[in-house]
Image 1 (cartoon, rainbow, N blue to C red):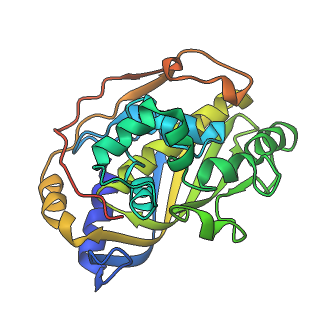
Image 2 (tube, helix red, strand yellow; image 1 turned 180 degrees about the horizontal axis):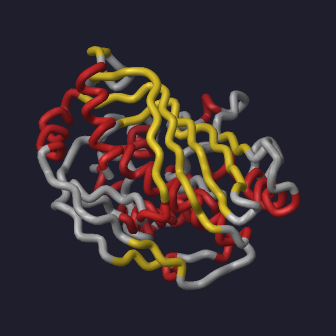
Length: 290
């Protein structure tokens, strides 16, 4: 994924120092684009390990329309835990629990999870119920019935509900494109805010996977994922990790196989996917800015 390393170089060369909402500080710039041809392999970063299980579980969670972290916690995915925990610490029920204790309560106490595990109307809610509209089902039907339409869009940015979300959607708008005599499907994402070190590798894999799933449902071949950025930034406390990663050599991309095919997008499960040939460099840790 030379495209990702080029993004690092671009932000380091052209970024300006900016303070941000989290008070961590960033080097950031505005406007950039990456393109990934899925015929060349699945775009999962090789210069550090990306936890594909988390990518897969989170996407299936989105597609279910779920907004409670219990499904993620039950499947050993912790990427959203900090946001409801920070909200819980301001609640009268807070008893001084650590993050680990909070997550254990989410896992073992259904009533507690219902009360304190919800993130508000985040991605899954908007994808499956945007003011009453199931955007996922509508887009699949549109791709199948009107493939050359220029209206194959899904928005996660809902101004009426954005203030109720634990985190306003960073990856906020996507558009599908049917090409090559109605045989291929491509996807472009507009991401308003992009954390280069932690978020972007995850987002690339997630939307490439979404493209593959929608293409599979529609009987098309996935072709290209186009990733367009607004505010693209590197947090100050990730600079050392970014430079370490940038020095690593690229490795061959893995292959992602969809083993079981479904007509209903809600029928896909973890066991339907197999990642083959993923041999990345070791994981590099970085703190999440909440």
